[in-house]
Length: 512
Ligand code: HEM
Image (cartoon, rainbow, N blue to C red; front, side, top):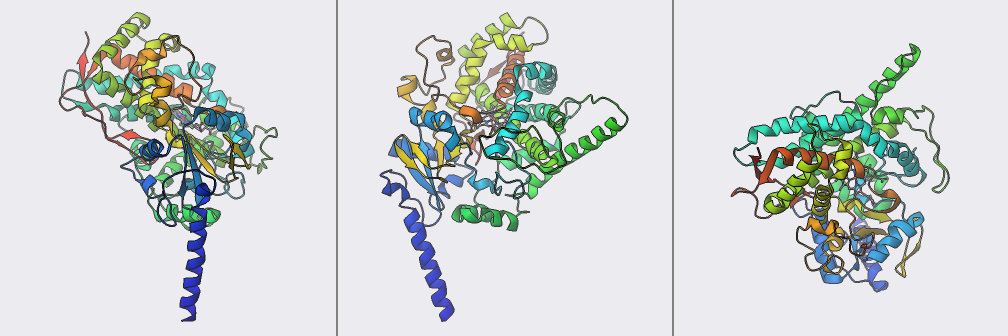
């Protein structure tokens, strides 16, 4: 009996705590969805078949450009007001330098003793600054020009694979883009020597990681008790939503690649042989140390040093981030082109005029303005990585006059921005690449943020854009992408992290 009373009392305390927490926004005069007891809106936002970006957008329509919800015990603010986003992403970056990472359960992301294997995407504070300063040179124009040949070679291999569909039955073009982007990132980041499209077991592993459901016990526990995230992580370490299953398999690839390279470099150094590798691992390992790194406070200068765990974490995130986003962007662009043949012909004319040699150089790509506009427009209509456009408040401050406490998380409703008639006019939701070529008044910098914004904007943006343009330029030079009876009337979009089309079914018609 005594035990039962205790249990009821503890339950009552927890329930009252959650009830009180769930009035956080109301107490501040901010509207929003009610959500379920304890878990708030987590369940609604964790459905793989209804990506959370769509749910958030429905709420924006109902509650306006600033509203709040609860992910378990954590208040989250959703913003689609351009000035408030500018304040958060840029002006007050010092108070919002952490990305919202609730469900990744990575432990303390600023402390290397707590979480040695952090990656650039999840890292915070001075750790993030250190990793970012190491990664950025790999994505500079100079570096991209150097790797353009390798990337174009992967495009040509994709074209060879696609050729079997020429003037033939409809097929899912998305699969080809997925093989292609995984191939590119494996070659650039992991030192894979040759193209391995349709022969790379990593592709299925990564696809499965992106298609995981978030409705799992460790995630429920982590959102319910954010203060105990680390305990949850340690207890469920081998669970597939943390470091088990496909995630463990992918980490194994990265571990092997990094440790093999460390050994190879040590052997080369002994024999005084110069390193001839030139991928991301090698670039990171130029700053390798076996000593433990003590990252200071955010805002202090960072030393360019990495541990093997940092490098493994970064390779892991490059494989994920470099694969899905660009493949999806290509699939959406292809779908829009198939549905809008007149725009496709316009792009083909531009490609024919600019790309007069067999190879398409980095400089040619820079001249393809209409193709650039097509990809931007595709990312406007279908933002693929809105979940990443988020921050966590690390120092209590204000946003748009509203007090934001440390620990509160903020998400941008990217769809609301990209589809806003106020920003883009009456044709906001239509496919109009021409809008990018008009010299009308410049739009607010937060109107289009498929790559995020501010100092934490996507580090791979240039690589993603140049990959997408090179691939589409080669495809459209050879074929027209044509819609037919099998082409989806509307795309079925899924995913808990990124938004991925289930399939994009098109025909390839030879042009010449
Ligand atoms: C069309 C392609 C891509 C899209 C739409 C995209 C989108 C995004 C977005 C929205 C963010 C969050 C930015 C923010 O918080 O402000 C991000 C971050 C990131 N992306 Fe991309 N991305 C793409 C391609 C790539 C590629 C090719 C790579 C690398 C190989 C990459 C690596 C990363 C990394 C490492 C971060 C974290 C950066 C940081 O926190 O400092 N992305 N990306």
